Image: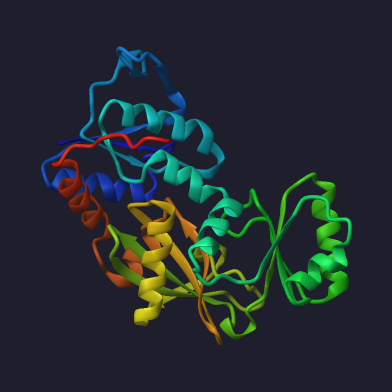
Length: 300
């Protein structure tokens, strides 16, 4: 098969591993910078051009699109979908997952347990917004933030009011969430491929930090997840229409809570911690799905 990876940086661990896994299975693979693509939006003959040439049809496209280029990156992916390439995560599903508010609303509509969450832009009553999620301590997030950036733990009501007022001054959308104290700075990252949890790791924040992101100094180890955690991870991914995703779960006293669904999960932390060939599993899934041909869903 001919496979394209949409990524701005082919030297990243995930891209290199996906290339290795594809080539070891005899596939042709090319890494394409989506921002360098340009497109002909033509109903008779839609095309994608790159580096001065019209790209041939790819059997499959793997989107590794950073959040900063979601708009243009998913536009390029849609064009490949129109050409009949199988996308490992459809453009509409990526857009759905990247919108934090929309994704939480969809998960809540399906009855998937989440931390109590408030959403605001310019709240008239900051104290009421804080009370909405059970008071301090609480977590305040910028909707546009990623990888732990724009996420603040406010220990007291006064601190929470100050942070919310500061974020409001940025003319930004704000999420406030209850702080799950019993999680103790840990979360579970479940890697889901094709409605199956293929790996799970527990991430622990470094001392003095509540964000467990590995690139922020957190550590990881293999973990056994419960059937309830497995089911809620699969349900979250299915709700958002994704083929592959990382689902971050908090272990609360009332049961597992979905914190976030990542449509472009990094592979390094999971592969290094578990020793599993996640990249190979992704290529195997593409082989299985792309063989049957891809038809663009309506409404995208």
